[in-house]
Image (cartoon, rainbow, N blue to C red; front, side):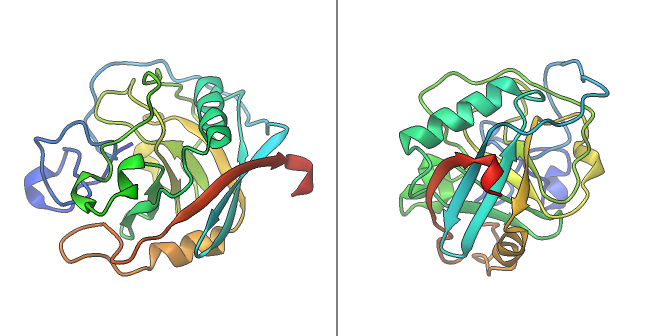
Length: 215
């Protein structure tokens, strides 16, 4: 899910983590323009999965409850990748303090080149849109995608405040139930000049699945 732009030249285009570059449309970030259409399921109330995801970072742990009744394919993908250790060693590679979002889960973020962050995914196929009318409020976890609405794969983001412009445009698949203060701290980390890349790596040590009842 893609990114709000940071410069007047790409007001409606996805931006890359390295700056404003409308040609890099494969970047999985937030943007206003989309290609493709998808139905928005209405009136579905989130129902928590029996397992919650614990994201261990060097800023603390963030616990997410997952909603398979909203986005069964994305929840299954997230859980599969967590079990495989896919997220271990990746980073929260993007901080958009203005919009209020932190994004992570890109395997490209494991290397020393921040210019490719935001463009990676897993070896599994991209997923179809699973849009609902669940609002993007503080703590919601969404699936990142490119301009193509059917391109969610592995990356995810956490909203730090209400973002109404994303309602019905991105797949909601979870919500933070513990550790939002840590997400807030991450969002205030300094970034590299002219980018939304943290100046120092915000490492996801690992993602594990634990019984939701523990939390």
